[in-house]
Image (cartoon, rainbow, N blue to C red; front, side):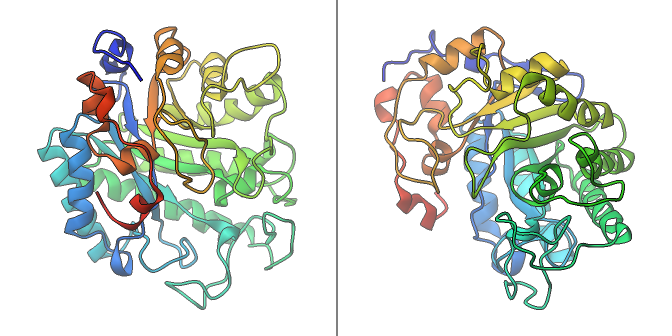
Length: 367
C-alpha cells in the first residue's frame, strides 16, 4: 500500500459542524472489549483510549456501554454506564483522552433479545425486546408493556445526562446490528400494535422518543450521533429499507427528532447500497437527510468483517476518493485501530509499510 501525506490529505482535513469540531476525519469505531471487571472501566481501559487520542484519532466512540436496565448487557466484563463506580471509571477515561488532546463519546447500548437467559451480570434478568422475539423469530419472553418501553427510553436519557455531566463530547446511540433499538426497527422482531409498532415509520417511534428524551437532557448544543445498519448479526443480507424511498421514510423521523450525525454501519464501505448508484449507505444517508455521516466497513483491510476475522492491509485509495468527493464526512476505523493505536498517525505520516494486519490475537488484550 503506497500512501503519502498528499494522497491522504482528505482524511486529515478538519471537520467543522455547529456542535463539534474535529482535527481530522478519523473516528475510532465502537468495539466491545470486555475488559471492565464488574462493568467498571479501569486504568487499563483509560490508557487504551488515551493511546488512540495521542496518535491523532479525531473522535473516539467507546465500546458499547450498558444503560441502566438489568438486561442491558450480556457479560460481567462489559462496561456499564450507570452506577457510581462505573461512572467514576468513565470520568477518568474522559480525563485521560482530553489530556491527550482527543475527543470522545460513549456509545449507549442495550443488547435486547440477543441476551440469553442466565447471562451475567444479572442472571435473573430476562432479555427484553419489542415483541419478545429472538432475531430468528423464536418467542422467548412476553412483550414488554408500553410503560416498560417508556422506562427504557428514560434509561437512555439518563445515560445521555450522565455523559454530559462527566464531560464527554457527545453521545452515540447504538441502533444497529440487531440490538434493542434495531429490533424495534425490524419487522421480523417488532410485531407491536401500540405506538411503538406498525409500518416502517411507526417502528422508528422507540428511537425517536429516545433521541427526543436525550435531547431534553443534554440541551441543543450537545452532539447526538445515531448508529444504524441494514444488516443484523444473524443476517448479513437483511434490509430495513429496500430502496432510497424507503430509506428516506426511515431516516426522516430520526433526523427530525434531533440526530446530528448518522453513523452508517456497513461491512464493506465500498459496496453500493442500491442498484443504479455508486453511493454506499452513508452516501445515501447524507443525500437524503443533509446531515453529516460516518462511513465504516473494513477500512484499510483486505478482509471483510466476519466476527473480527483476521485480515491484511490494503490501499485506502477508494476510500479517499469517496471522502474527497464529499460522499461522506467522517470515516470510522475498527479492527485496524483495535490492533494498532498508531494507525492514524502512521497513515498521516505516510508510513504505509508500518501498518499492521489484523490478528485475532488482538482481541485478547488492550494494545
